[in-house]
Length: 303
Image 1 (cartoon, rainbow, N blue to C red):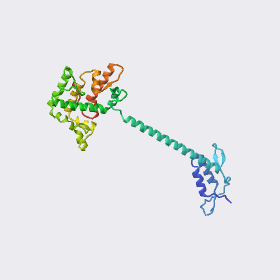
Image 2 (cartoon, rainbow, N blue to C red):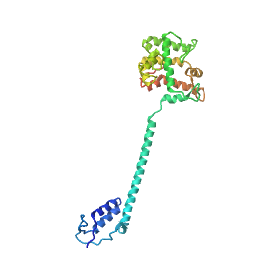
Image 3 (cartoon, one colour):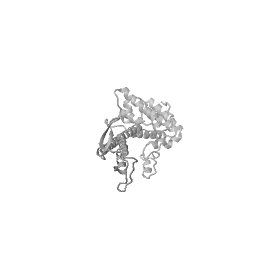
C-alpha cells in the first residue's frame, strides 16, 4: 500500500521552509515521491497514477551540489527555517533602528542649519558691558537704548533743547557734534509728522505715560520688539531721521567716548580692531536693523 502524507502537513513544512531555495526544491521532491495518497482521517488527499518508492517519512533532501543530495530531517529543516527567519528579523530590526537614528540626526542637523544666527548676535559678541566684564551685551538692551534716545532727541528738538546727556548728548563747544545735531534738528522741523512719535505715550507699554495704557490693556506692544519697530519705521522719513540721529551719536571715532555713550566697550587685540567693531555696529544700526525688520533698503551715506 502506498504511503500517505496529509496536505496540511505538506503546506506547513512548505511555508516554514520557503525562505530557502534549496528547501523549496526538496519539498517539491517530497510531494512527487509522496504520491499516490488516499483519504486520511477525513482530510483531503491526493492520489498518484503510479506507485513511487518514497524516502523515509522523517527525511527530506537538501541540495549540497549540482548532482548530490544529502538527507535532512524535518526537525533540522524547521530549525533551519526558524533560525533563518529569526536572523532575518533581527537584521531587519537593527536596520530599522539604524535608519531611525540617522533620520533623527538629520532632523537635528537641519534644525541647527535652519536656525541661522542673526548678524547682531554675532556682532555683539565683540563687546562687553562696562559694569560686567564677564557679561554679554544683549540685542534688547541696544535696541531700547537707541530707540529711547531717538524719541528723547525728537522731544529735545520740539523743546528747543541742546542735549548734554543721554546717548546723543554732546558738549555745545564740539563743532562736529553741533553741526550734525543741526542737520538732525532741521530735518525734524521740516517734517512735522515726526512730532507724533516723540511723546512717551506713543511708545510701547514700558515707556513713561504708555505704562498707563499698558496696565489698562490698551498698549499694542509692551516692548521695542520687531512688531513695534516695523510699524514705527514704516515711513522712510522716520528712517532718515533715525540715521541723522545716529550721526550725532557717532560724531567721533573715539573708544572712550563711545563706551561712555553705550555703557559697553569693544573688545579686541588693539585699538584698530576695537574701532572696526564700532564701525560695524554703526553700519548695523544704519542698515542691518531695517533689513531684519524686512523694511525697504533705502540707506544712503548721511554722514
